[in-house]
Length: 353
Image (cartoon, rainbow, N blue to C red; front, side, top):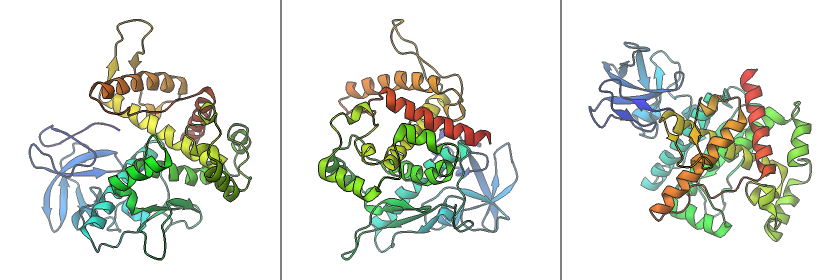
């Protein structure tokens, strides 16, 4: 992700900020320009942009920004909708009967906006399901009830997330029970978006046969494959062929896990690039990091992998120095790198179309 600065005082600000901590200026994200801008009141609920690119132009806050404090995106003053491009994708929100549910909704929307930022940068902006019932995307955030347990998943462009995943204690318990090295809200969004984009980019396209050569035949029974996985576990050598044990359950899950990991890699490298991060090793055989172009726009996958190995080496070393777990507890085998390369090629082909 790019770095952002207040248009009023130059203070560095973050993607989630709603106010500059230095000057107090109101901040809002403009998705069309992929930037956080500073605004001043213009009366009648409108805001005047201080961004030099559109200084003086009038905007309005997303309804969920102005009224619910779960968003920070802006719309043009004359936009017909009261909801921003992100909030329009959410069809069902949690029942706001408790403060916890409101907090969970806020966390879910925050993670969703990070996903959408990356998708837009990759030229993969999803169409709202309200506008295209067949190919569009929608989200619903639900909670368990005494009669029904909510399963996080994707079906025909509808991504459902159990709001319990926004509770860090629940998520950590689940991670330990599942034996996962990693479990984050953003990771859920990335994974489920992979299922959506499999339907959009792979099914019925020139990529389906190359996909089957790498990931396997997705036509094998999905339910039976998952049941077998949960009963017997992953193959003992899964790390040689898959990014995660769950990826070994079915080609669809292998794709979704690999897709999520690709987004994980390019997003993190893009942030390192925006911050001007470089690594100058003491010895010539140690990892070097010199990112020459934005990874989210890069055509060269080999450079992405090289930079990623260098960055994760340092990130893991830094965390170990302060007694924290590795932020990147994964191994990338050659077959996994080949699958990541395939995702990259599919994404770049779409971007060039």
